[in-house]
Image 1 (tube, rainbow, N blue to C red):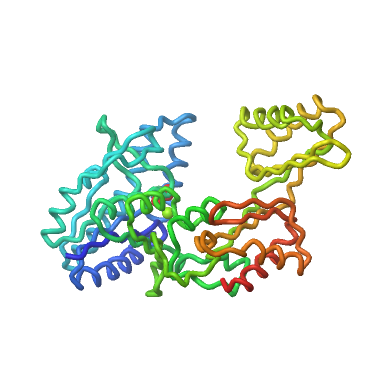
Image 2 (spheres, rainbow, N blue to C red; image 1 turned 60 degrees about the vertical axis):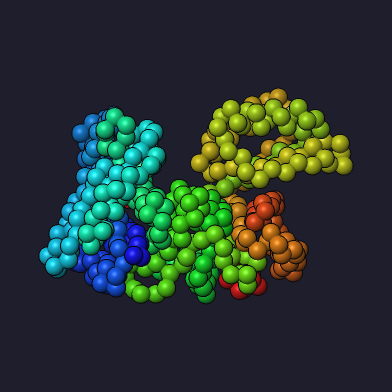
Amino acid sequence: MNRVVMKFGGSSVATIEKMKAVAARVIRRHESGESVVVVVSAMGKTTNQLLELAAQASRNPSKREIDLLLSTGEQVSVSLLTLIFNDLGYPAIGLTGQQAGIKTIGLHTKNKIDDIDPTKILKHLDDGKIVVVAGFQGINEEGDITTLGRGGSDTTAVALAAKLSCNAEIYTDVSGIYGVDPRLYPQASQLAAITYEEMKEMAFLGAKVMEPRSIEIGHRFNVNILVASAHTDEPGTWIKEHVPMEHKSITGISVSENVILVSLHHLPPKAKVIADLFVKLAQNEINVDIISQNMTPDGTMDVAFTASMDDMATVHAVLDSIQLTHPQSQIVIDPDIVKVSVVGSGMRTQSGVAAKLFELFSQNDIDFKLVTTSEISISYTMDKSLKTKAVALIAGTFNL
Ligand code: ASP
Ligand code: MG
């Protein structure tokens, strides 16, 4: 029989009314003969509220107790939704993470799914029941309740689908995945499909649609994932291994504003100077992204790199020490920049994407500062003021 895992997030189960709408959607699938496992998050903002209570109770709450506390949020959703199914006359059973066989490892509040024993779920499905499972939680080797980190219900859903060899359908407030943020480019069209790779690249580059770990699991176990609206019957976006051959060379654009550009001028032209700089940055746990280095005609060296805005203070401190060592150097930190990245698996086989973009930028006076490429992406660092123009140009040219 056809199985499916359907996951509903916190806002889709925020009230009993909304849960009834979820139930109706699930029942249609159940009636059409599918074996349905439903994964739910905690109602609305419950998880945040529980965390606030914990903060009132203790200045330094133990993570084990936090897990115990947070896991109740999902259990409330599970039991209420199951009651709704039963009330409507449908056989259903609610399961905690532990009852669903979800075994986890790691640190409390940040556990990872180690394995799932699906015996119980399979038995209930065989009995014709709708199985409702608490997302975001499991049980560790000590028998303690654990949670998977914020947004972890997506991970539960995809991991269950992997174990049950079926698709995972993630129902949310958005109707699917867009190649470009519609707030930046209102004409943006929704993607019918995107590869795991592209999705990971987009998530990494700043787009927040799903918990990135769930995409990783989907990729590893080849689970087709549907992201679709919880409120309408629009088709949604499939995340999978392969998308049609006619796939565009560029699938999406992601924009990260949380970036600073650091430029160092007039450094002595020595490899050791660069090594010292990046070792210092690494020792301070600063993640450096794009790096460029070049020798100038006056016999000195320029180095530039991007880092996260969150690390601004630490970057400042490191650079102050570099300035002391090299008094003649000139150091500039520019926070008014963005990183615009174009992503597409098609780039692997189609050449000329970079050329087309360079041409586009030169014709339209978009002066970028740094460029970097990966196998399936090209990122440009540019002034914040150019963001909207650049995105609209790329999206228009590549039909996104
Ligand atoms: N309720 C948890 C959270 O708010 C897990 C989830 O919603 O996926 O992070
Ligand atoms: Mg969520």
